[in-house]
View 1 (cartoon, rainbow, N blue to C red):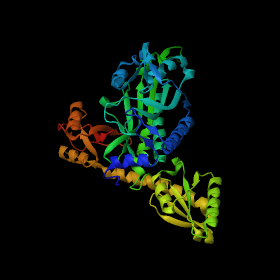
View 2 (cartoon, one colour):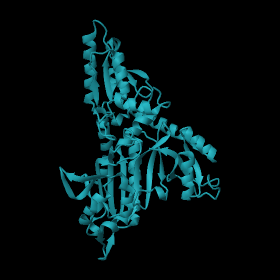
View 3 (cartoon, helix red, strand yellow):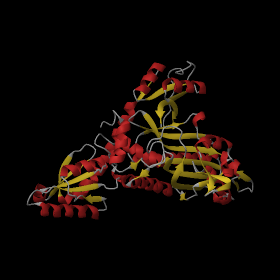
View 4 (cartoon, rainbow, N blue to C red):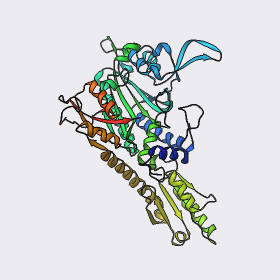
Length: 472
């Protein structure tokens, strides 16, 4: 099945065949992470948590429920999430005196506690994170990993003495996410959302929009400067060095683990199945014996020797001794995206060598047995670079300039991301969405782009170069 011709079917088939996710759970919008998907998700989470802890973030774990009173304290926030909330109203047959909700995000659950924890300037900055499930009643059609009613994510929440410190924290968060996504070989646009599309309760929002083979963008991470909005609502204040009480300034940022897994599968996979960056592959190397009659015992012993050498070097390896043909084993592990396959046959045994097949281009090389580990590690570096380069090349190819509405509509129909000029009027943004079925995702923050033509809708002077795409 061709990934770029029928992405939806390819994606669903890959999720099932590679033991990523089973979408047959009897509640719509909820899925079961199977062994391979759970392990990859864990690797991605550990990669991010490592960066957060290295930058002074402390891990916390809050309850899944939020009180109705706390949720109602920030008016703009509750308006933004009110239609997506799962309410808990009963304990058995007993109706609760106060409703609770399952966290759609955790600001209103965490910030009442921040008010207890922060007393003076010595308590700042406060930088926390947790890796949890969140629950949102999506009204659109649900999609495995991409749009679910329960999904995995990591959220960080910070508090600072003033807006300047909060602004520096936004930049640190952007760097943490960029480093993590790049280690996964992903490519994306980093876009500041228009004011009408910011996170509910934020001063502004910045998002990482990853390209997808079907032309939609996949929001894999967001960073928000909250200003003092939540501090005022939850009375999060501190005593400064002069003895005056001040509101903290806050930031929060969310890393969509489920969506990041979807992006890895969608951007790197090919018509054979998944391709995993070596760093997050549950099995980095699979060893496949290729015995011939009268040589089975010796070949299997040699394969075992190769396996032990690879494992002793600290690599995650699997020796496939199942009663299947080598071709069946090759096909199986290609679907699962294992980065490197070691093939061991009688000729390899006689010449004291091994054959390595890498997953990205399916090329095969032969190396002396003594060079097994160093050759595999070199392949890991090469594969990671190739995956990132290929992904970046695709993003460049799917991003096109649209000077007029006909060009914009053609771009969206052709599964592209369109670069357009816009006057910043919301009515023109709405017209873009209604006419093209794409939506303004925002303007780039990693470069300065000056409009070279009038607004694509009204013809007035354009103030921004923005990117338009369909989205999940």
